[in-house]
Image (cartoon, rainbow, N blue to C red; front, side):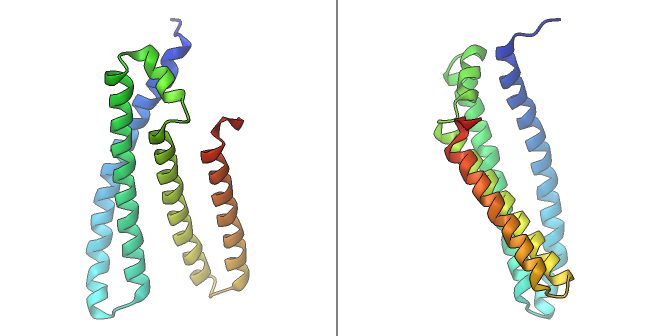
Length: 157
């Protein structure tokens, strides 16, 4: 069965939206469990690290919700507003759309937040070794720089 090329991108976007919705639901459950476990610890001893991690988790949940909302808007624009699959191909492959840029920015921010938390945990587990801090900072800056290039110069590849 031969598929035309213009069907690949809209189908990929549809499956992407399905899995993003599934993982968002899992994230909401895990977020709730993490807060349920962490909040009693705050009452016993108020630590900045627990409050910071809860704040980062909340921010990541809000960013994930915004990312999913943008996906819904993009799907609606591509299939309903622009009338059909052929124009959906053009819509989804246009990297200059503001919704595409916003989606990439949110994804980058979420990735950097998660990586920063993991870098902090590696720093703590390594007994505050400054080399771990140096290595993870270099990796985070590389990720931020690479994502900046991809967001603002998406047509270079």
